[in-house]
Image (cartoon, rainbow, N blue to C red; front, side, top):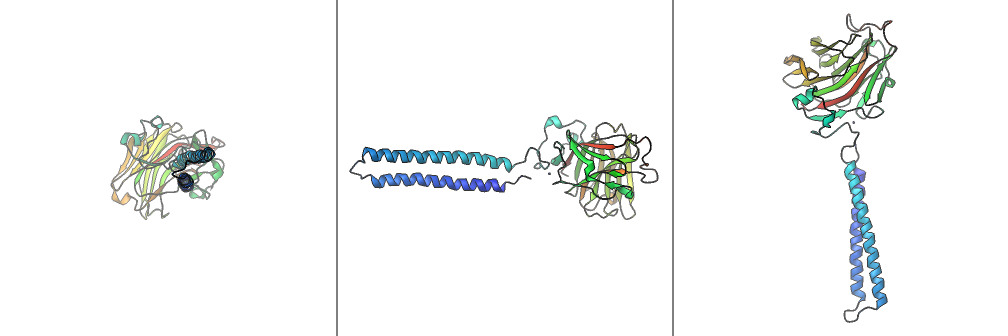
Length: 320
């Protein structure tokens, strides 16, 4: 989620040169007047009128150029800032208070925003998100980028048959906070997940933080799980609610701890140094297809809708 200020600045620089040139022209007219008018002999009326007209014309040209410079400089200033649809605000940029919820962990803890996507457009911003195109977890099905859609202010990750959807934020970081507002349609056989995945792609030794997993089709229990070490050690906690409705999930990752939040309330914490990932992680979302695991995501069955959607209102990333 970039505005190119280079061309605008270059245009502004060119016009500044034109303004300087215009001023030189005015100075040149004045010099010409002084040279053609003898000090002891006033110029004729005709000469005075010609010179006056020439001066007025140059003044008008200079004024027009000045207006154009101001207009283009304003345009350059707009393009060098954050555009209205940007997903990468400058550090410390605040969201509209009307968009904030008292149930956000970020609001309650006064986190500093560094990047976000509100999904207000009509397509996925692939400058910052990379859609999945490979096999789903446990090689059950296929991720299809066509199953990712953006409309009416939300992102939809839709699963149908043996196809599903997933995507990853391109930029990773070591430590930080991530929060998202989501809901999931009920349906056996598909499990929505939000996680932090190691930039190194070395799993399980470089860790994994699952900030939300909802494997059961009734969408009444969410899990927070941390994975680490060559033997895939795990630690987890669960929370119950109706996750077909909107809820915010957040993770806070610092050198001292990993904390999971549901609607701004802490429901998981570990201070185990061994569990803390060793390198940068990036945020990802996906919907897995069952059967997966012994007692995790069941296979789709006769009750499963023709399509099951995992819906995302926004994703926001905060400084450590």
